[in-house]
Image 1: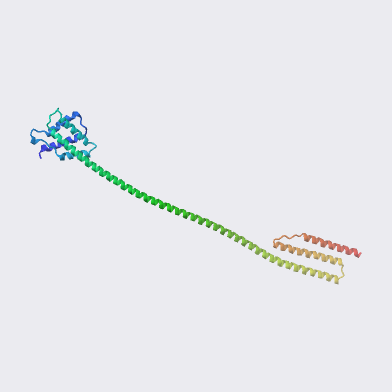
Image 2: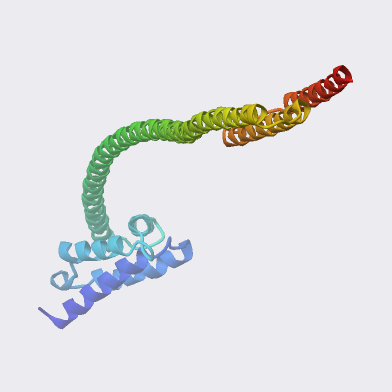
Length: 302
């Protein structure tokens, strides 16, 4: 490959890239046309430059991949403007066929690249849609799992509530049982206390009964013994009946008071009240009777 041909190919690619940078103004069209003319035209037909599809394709791919700085639409519009300028009456029509082929080739490759780009975008869009659909399906599956987990949690909560209710019921029953047990214990304590009191009362009553028998026996024995001695004195000794009666009355009063004292002691053991009003009355009656007997005896003796 000749060096001149290589240089022309490089110049050709530079021009295409520059035309893709912006929309060329009318004043600049002539300059670009001049550059294409220097590139394409030669007096010797065998030395005239012919562009390559490969170079056009590489330039268009580069422009497509660098859309921030270049644009395929700008390239196509600028080449159309150059072709229209070359086909006008203001310039020679030396390179019109070359520009016409260039416009045809650029338009064809642009359409092909845009078509493939659209196919890729569609495939990417389809992949994105498939990915979104897959994610939605996974999300639905996850949602179902979450719903299942929520239902399971609700079921566990219901079971826990039932267990709490049973526990509360058991605690209530236990409290009721404890209350009943306390009542039974209190009742047992009260019964034991009553039994203890009854036992003490029984002991006291036994003691009182024995004391009563002893008192009665002592009272009767002492009284009879005292009366017997008094009768013996009256029969064997020449004494006055008044003195004997007085002594016997005094002895009876003493025995009576002794008997009532023993009853008082027994009532104290039994925790019962025992009145002495009757004792005072009996003492007064006995004394008054003795006085009357002595007085009457003295009266009849005189």
